[in-house]
Image (cartoon, rainbow, N blue to C red):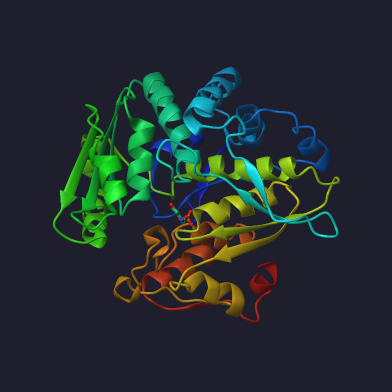
Length: 366
Ligand SMILES: *Cc1c(COP(=O)(O)O)cnc(C)c1O
């Protein structure tokens, strides 16, 4: 499987290349050349698999450059009961009584991993696959990131003790929750570097962006990223939609809806990806807090990003996002992989102009 950019660049290489490279050179995000699909019968046949082997079936068509035995081994090393404190990995708990049609409300538990953030679901895999790919290529990686909490902890727990990887994580001094601060700052491994900055999250983010804009410096110091635009994270997150669906044990082809708390649009986009692969997903409900740019789009058809100054600070900082990076991938898919259209829209977004889909064929595809 080859990867392309949402902004038109054709050959970004295969899975391991986009795993290590972050943004595409044209500024777009990596997408597979096509989305492989599975039949309902194929999906149904995975019902008895353990989480790791299900992940193998879902991810394999996207990863043509890691031998299958190695990929299966990496996934089995990632999704263990020891790491996720549960044999099911992502337990599905009924909330209340089942409805008259056998339906009901369920809670998909994604936060039983080492840092107790759902980001562990993908980040733990990243830790294992980074180590594998870097070893194979005899390369090293210095991960530079900015965090307001969840991403930093999940990344550090995933990379802890991994060979060939260092983590340099910038965080705003005194502005993280006491719990997350304790989680991160109590890790004293040789490859983990916590750097607290006098400032706010955006100051940390700006430094990371400045480093990323300096291609020569980046290359010289093997600098990479683990933010939610990393394709491997999105792909690994698609797996638990399959897992939840199969656990529900519905009749073949029956649909399940998912409601997903959203910030950078990574998690819910993974659900959209699962649906694009043939999983019978009905509604994907994009849940937001008062920073409801995405809600405005899905209810009104206009995507208008909010400048950082207008983003409210809430008790859920991971959802306090005015411009959702992964939304670019969604626009790309609803246009039928029209990179020039996506590029044009994202330029508008970058310059503060709204993207208005009302009355277009694209809105019908939403
Ligand atoms: C990261 C995070 C989100 C946002 O997820 P996205 O994939 O960025 O949409 C929401 N809630 C919590 C607790 C998170 O850690």
